[in-house]
Length: 357
Image (cartoon, rainbow, N blue to C red; front, side):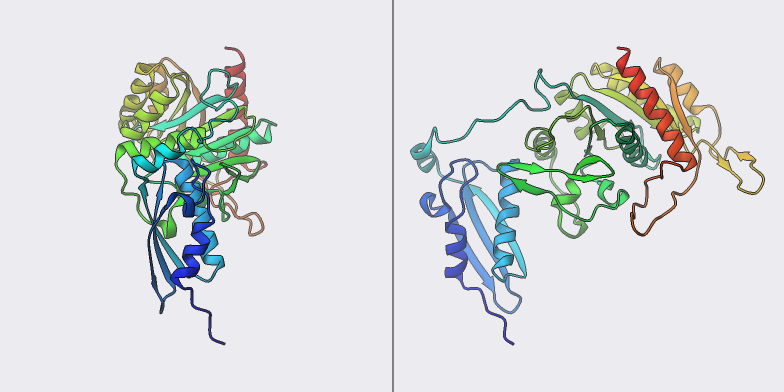
């Protein structure tokens, strides 16, 4: 059976019926279809589309809609480039943009508590702590969201065993829910684990969109898995959410604690309150003898907490989660696992600490 080949006219018809996400006029009306090309042997469709604003969450949603529509029509792969409509076209439709919507998570009326999970350097298990703390809070009945803000090194979807993608409802992106946690990650919007090569300002916009353009609903806590260190993205988060709470993750090694202190100092300088330190890889416990081996040294977590005038919320040993094929999630500890119980205790401490403020 020969597959039907998409034509440029068919692609133009499909795109022409789609609405510019800002002007709420079809691309046919705005002359927003700039270019279409098709590689017939591969059924690869390339399009260039002009919309009112680029570099936004609306563009991201629109991109998903275009890809879905063209693939449904028979395209194997789709390439999309965006450009902005000329000023004279925008002037015709000025005023038809929609500014409707309720309070965002970043508005003063928001009741959501932000908890940023930070570390001085990579490799200390910060993302593992983020996903397990989020799940532990959800197990305690809290409404929890998790933003994978480590935009260059996103790993949360894989760690939580998430295979589906967010969907678009109206003009909002609906986050994926797993283990009672609503999750959004750059990993959802990048094809085939491609590297992210955007510059700082674009990443800042993307992060802002994760807060403003995602349909989070009512949340008690929104956890942010920050990139390691004190770079652009971490600075963006600190400036966007001036009253965020922060948890610093470190290993017990004194050098790791020394580096982590920089991330903590940055948090304090930007008015983020450091509510505690989590010492990961604190020790290895032999299953045969029960003896603890402090393979990464001792004392780093206490030293770091003392320097940041806070407390150690918990110490996590080196141990793998038990993988379950039905609920496959490579980094999530079960509720009755020894580490699952430690995360539960940490979550209870976090809730108590924030409630007492």
